[in-house]
Image 1 (cartoon, helix red, strand yellow):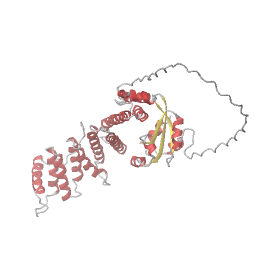
Image 2 (image 1 turned 60 degrees about the horizontal axis):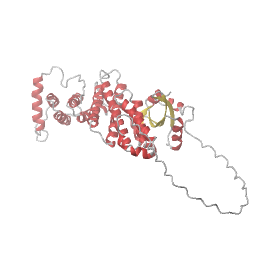
Image 3 (image 1 turned 180 degrees about the vertical axis):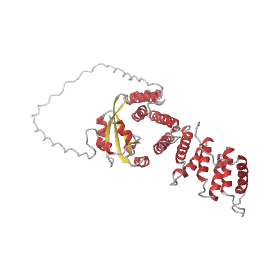
Image 4 (image 1 turned 90 degrees about the horizontal axis):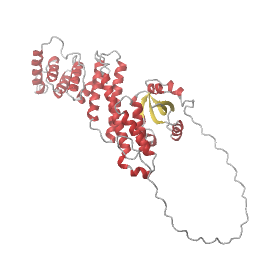
Amino acid sequence: MNIRVLHPFPLLPAGTPIRWAGVLAGACLALLLGGCATNGTPVPDERSAYAAVTEAIERGDCVGADAALETAERHHPGGALLTSARLQAAYACIRMEDPRRARRQTEALVSGDASFTQQDYAHYLHAVAGYGIWKQNHRVATSRPELLADVEKARETVEEFAFFVRRFPDSRYRDEALPYLVDLHEGLARSELAIARLDLERGEYERAAARAGYVAEHFAETNSVSDARSLQQQALALAAQPPQTVAAAATGLIASEPVRIDPIPTPAPVRRPAEPTPPPPKVAPTPRVVAAAPPTPAPAAASIDRRPTTAAGGLEWIRAQPRTAFTIQVLGLAQEAGVRDFLARHPLDRETAWIRTERNGADWFVAIAGSYPNAEAARTAIASLPAEVRRNQPWIRSFGSVQDAIR
């Protein structure tokens, strides 16, 4: 997994001889694991209890460190060494590639209201543990549900690192977050592109083109950008072909380069000898009747669009939102008329707007819906969108990114 974390402090105070730490740890394990709490044997003091955590960490035993910490916390809840012990155990489990146990320890630190001096380190380890969990699943994700879950987890982890950087801008671990963010973006691009390939295989060419175009636009610095552009061109070419032409070329759907599909030639009709045509029967002429032209109906009254009506699709509303708030991007097209028509055909029961931005040097029009105080609220709101809108795989983004993208 190649996870590298920094560890700034020891569990036991400086000056505690390591040989005594070992003795205390051995005594503690013998007492605690032997059932001393239930048979009348005196409970070890706090230092001895937490020494068991140190010993497990030193021998590389994440499971043992986790169990020793749980036992020590049970006998000494809220002890002075609890926070340090949790951080030590989380760090050790990350190094031993057991991020789920690490995550459980950091969750208890970042979700509470307690104040302690190593809060930045706790949030840093919490995000790193989330990265480790994502990485384990990312390696084996192949089906569409697995890939969609992988994308969701990656986005959540990116947001956790972003929260850490925003809350602790002067943390010594701030720069350590960059390699994780780079790898998360690479992984996001790979998974999004894999989903686009699955769409292509299923014959959903427009959806495949849209997702591949999204990768090319938003992950231009990743290693997947050239494959995304190639797949987008291929999907657009297939979407423009007649159905019988696409069926004939089905074996070349997932080529590494765009496939050129020539139209299937239509055989020339067989000419048959012309048969003599009998003369038409003589019919008496019918009097010509001129009907009055029907009255022209009055034009229907134009429907009132209650969404933002500024020239740029709602710029005033967009710029009025906090940069830290989130919205849902429901569509991206190269034609302004297509975005306007989409918003008109799909009432979303929330504020909607569109912006003009740029993709690959050309205009690109994006439709957004709603304003939410955080990413979780925006993700939850996606489920309430109409099914026709959810088919476009809407995703959340901050208003800061929307405001920066306005052209």
